[in-house]
Amino acid sequence: MVRPAPLPEIPLGHDRPPAPFSLPDNFQLGTATASLQIEGGDRNNSWFRWCERGRIKDGSHCLRACDHWNRVAADIELQKALGVTAYRMSLEWSRIEPREGTFDEEAIALYREELTALRKAGITPMVTLHHFSNPLWLEDSGGWTAASIVDRFGRYTARVAETLGDLVDHWVTINEPNVYLAFGYLFGEWPPGKRSPSAYFTGARRVAAAHEEAYRLIHAISDARGQHPMVGIAHHLRVYDPATPERPDKRAAARLQRLFQDIFLDRTVPFSDFIGVNYYSRDIVARSANPFTAFTRRSVKADRRVNDLGWEIYPEGLSRICTQLGQRYTLPLVITENGIADAGDTLRSRYLYDHLREVADLVSSGADIRGYFHWSLMDNFEWLEGESARFGLYAVDYETQQRTLRRSGEFYQAICRDRGVTRKSIREYLE
Ligand code: FCB
Image (tube, rainbow, N blue to C red; front, side, top):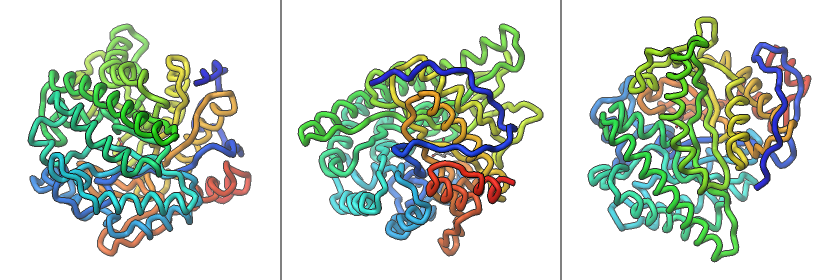
């Protein structure tokens, strides 16, 4: 892989006036979703149980979600209407392997249909194997801290690569292992609800081993077919900035970065063909920050704009992260998620513009960034926040399952059409 050229200092600041920019022809523009958040209808996974236990803040249930399982064709039409060239989706392990060692050919066939239809529509799929949800049999027999996860994840991966791999050139093995393990094993807020630092660190080791195994298997199975896919992890990366320039605050920020990000990157980058960057926000860290709560309780600078969930809007952070990754590692980057909870759709167009412009600037200064996936195609079941957090380019009415393109969705449509932002779309969507 070619190491990205060192990047010049770029004047940053989301308050700079919008100017046109364009993206290279081969740059992928897409949207991202996750199976549990959109499919609905599955009772065999860890989040189903979590919902049954009343753990979702607004009382909603992942059994409903966007009913995507029954609306695959219509949801591909939504993407065609946007004009995207790529789509990041995930597979639900509990549907594919409902009981340990038993694979459901019908579920696999439905995913095959979806992937085939996407490709036919000119939309390149990027497929995630694990996005926060587990089959119940796995959850109840050790989950991600048991040594058995490596073989189990390997067996599932191999079956998927054998049955669907001919349709997939871009794989994400595991989505945001840091978020998954922190919320599920350290803070106890997500299934399986554990609160154990040692489980978190064991989980981190298992994730690295399971990823390595999946990486090896996907390549071995694809090589035999003469196919050469890209395999990576979608990492949740935030900027951790110290509350003051003083040493103790700086140390606290560096500690969080190490604990929640670097240990995952360092262990998995050697077995990756790209680094997936899921970027949303930054955290301000004071010396008093407790690592075991800091990840959940965000601290935001007083004068900054925030999204509906209180996350700071900080587009420069995306450049800072990509620049750091370019300096530390030699892999191409893909922005595998970026988006905003904004029910009123008053901030999303500007958010989209500011973040994509950071990416465009980096690309034009030589950074190897291959694509941008907006989170999300449509509103969906946002974990503990349920249906209340609205991240979609399409608004979803959960009662009728009607999808309606938001104004910011029209803006993304224009970006996909123009392969960048023109003066006309600035006038139309940002002024
Ligand atoms: C990311 C998750 C994704 C979604 C967005 C808002 O951390 O990967 O599933 O919840 O946040």
